Image 1 (cartoon, rainbow over the protein chains, first blue to last red):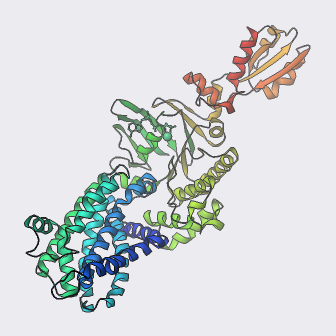
Image 2 (image 1 turned 60 degrees about the vertical axis):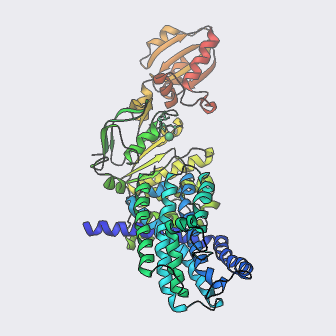
Image 3 (image 1 turned 90 degrees about the vertical axis):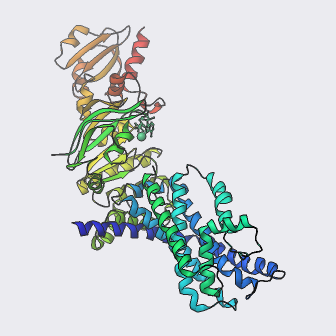
Length: 254
Length: 325
Ligand SMILES: Nc1ncnc2c1ncn2[C@@H]1O[C@H](COP(=O)(O)OP(=O)(O)OP(=O)(O)O)[C@@H](O)[C@H]1O
Ligand SMILES: [Mg+2]
């Protein structure tokens, strides 16, 4: 009886995950733009700025590669989560929510679905890593792990916010006042060194994504500020908090 | 055996009393209609029975499981087709059913067979690999019916299954509902505004108004409340006394140029009746409908825009009375 219940919950998690994957497959244009956009950052922005900026050991494009990966995870994950506002508007979620599957399982299925979408995009971006000579391919598994945990945190955050939002109007606000600041303050595009003003360093150090960027940069380029265990610890802690918060808000959602 | 039982089931939203103490006993295998005007509390009642809405007070059970104490078991036992469409339009028909089968834990070895069965039942097998975005309103509704029944629920709730569909499609949907209820031996609880349609499908109906059940019986028994059929005859000198003496005549009303007779089984007794009235000019028979019952009980029509219902029993009475005056 008890074993049966667990199996039903697992099937429920799988069901939600499977649905997200089907949706992902169908949104070809979204996949393409989620690949093209980071490549533009790397080649257009990276080449342009790189022409006049000099960063210690590696060239600028290589330097921002980990930052752009993290950015892809950030945007992909948060907007995936926020998308439930739209699902709710279209009543797509209604039929799922009355099923005999606990809310927490549905939430978990959504988180895994979102992470899968995002990590598939990241895998494609990893395929381009050979274009950046300083990248150490042996660091990719570790970078992948960090980005995966980051994705759990950010999909959960998106779902938490999506559970609270009543309408799509909140999208703009969240994107301008949360997503972009998280990106700009993460050290994705610039090194955190003594040249930065103190207030900026403070903000950057408060941003959990800084540790994701730093950890990934450490894994791929061997350039980092914090020891790896700090990066991993902060990101994992962030993921746990966001997951708990998200599951509570999602469970309470009407 | 009652499969659904409610005891003083009540829901209030602040000052709005959506459902005010409903007592119901719905038998296994029954098709039960919940009829009432907008805002009567139909959707709220169904929501409580499906454990989506928590009752303010009172209790209810489905297949023996209490809706408040044991919502997980109740959910496994019920199927629901919501008033508003809830298909996943980025998935195909088949995928919608598969998602549902997984969510309801339909065993893997039965899944495919069951999905095929349901698709065939609603005649969508040939379109099952198309995105439901490309389906017509009627097809979507049919797929939702199939989805609701996929996990063999003990009770299937249908909230306005034919709302917004054209009359032809509505008739088809009702045929499917009857066929499904029969084939699957499922108890069906449905709500609708369409009285004439409810009358044809439902074994019993409950008329709900302002959150209360004001009448509950088989459609034919409810119509008995109206006293029988109405026959209006225009003739020069109708023998009112003689007519009144006939055993099946209940009431006779004489107007200037017409006589209104309330009687049982007009279709059987009309020939005899006409034989005693000389010089009949014209005859009209009106058989009462559930709409008439509804108007009699509530003093209102179920729908304000009920052009379709004009020509009902009560309309006739009103019309003839007017003419008489
Ligand atoms: N979430 C809610 N908050 C406040 N009031 C509500 C809520 N849901 C329903 N009501 C009120 O409860 C009453 C019953 O609503 P319900 O949706 O059950 O009616 P209904 O019989 O299904 O009507 P319809 O035929 O229009 O679907 C209405 O007065 C409605 O305004
Ligand atoms: Mg309703």
